Length: 193
Image (cartoon, rainbow, N blue to C red; front, side, top):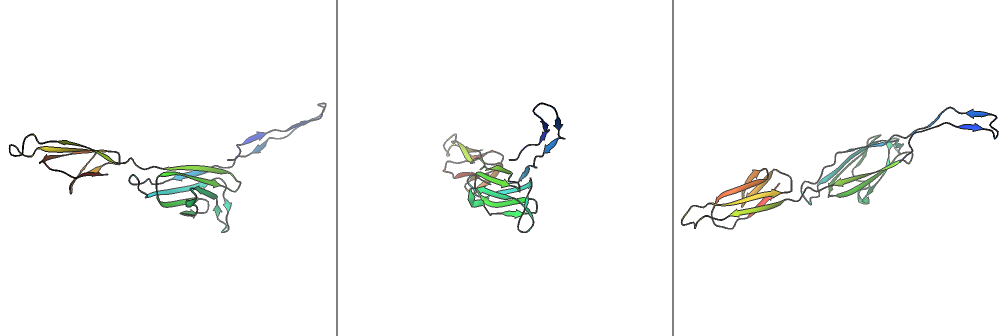
């Protein structure tokens, strides 16, 4: 962090108020702030480690590095990210770090004057997908009627649309699907988003 702009007027006088001198206004200027562009990608599914940390830092007052390019000092927490996916674009600092899991990441960036900021980046899993299954038994014994059993599958969590599977048969729907005309049997059911 750096100081805000302050305007100061200095007034000096002798002990007996005989002479007074007033300065012209003196300005203390605030350094420019950091700017963050966050295009990070969250995990595809709950528990996946396919998130991408995608950040660009600009602003403040970069220093010149050994290659005479404008640069910033930075530190990641967890420290295992230090040195990964960083590209200096002469005045901006770009990170592209794939294969990350959900969690909270911290990036401290420091400019030429020691002004710093800490960015908190939350990589969040989508809600875990679950399914609610509601079977309806046959209305009569199969010898007296046709197969009229049903299985309704409701998807909860995840990211729709969903694919509902009854064995190898797949059906796409927004959040619910009902299989009809089923005979008495044991069925394998699963849902994918």
